[in-house]
Image 1 (cartoon, one colour):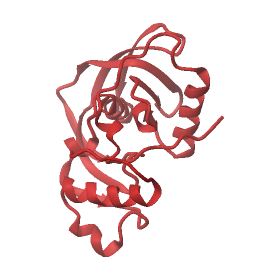
Image 2: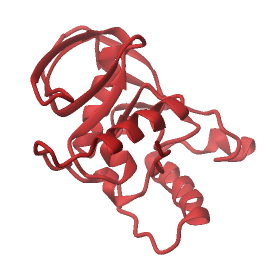
Image 3: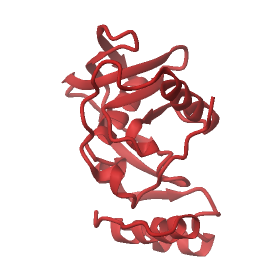
Length: 191
């Protein structure tokens, strides 16, 4: 298995609407690599666009079982909302409070290419909403209360700047600068 590179905020693939998956086009090795990457990065979910593959595929865990879901869609969401902190592997070191439905029902195709319907509550419901958002080019910070931004990684932004970075444009600049330290010739979209 191989650890995949998780792309970060500012990379254009992350804002694209991912293409539907077709049976047989995604290899078992790629799925295993996504699962391994999610686990090694201490994530609870990972969407294919986060590893620069614009396909409607997510991997996630409910804490007991791992899920591989092709073409997932939320078909129902509770009216009851919970607001809690979220983070994202594509936004390392950044957390913010995000309102999410407490319960969702998701339809998808399983790894065995069978239709499945999942009813999720609590953290697993949040994970599914977060990862499905990625498939639609939506970030958790698009839904977040920006006054709740919290930087937890000093490698991303110096401690004395953390409280000064409070809006989407400033966040984008931090990630553009970080991304350009590790990647050449990348074009970024405006959020």
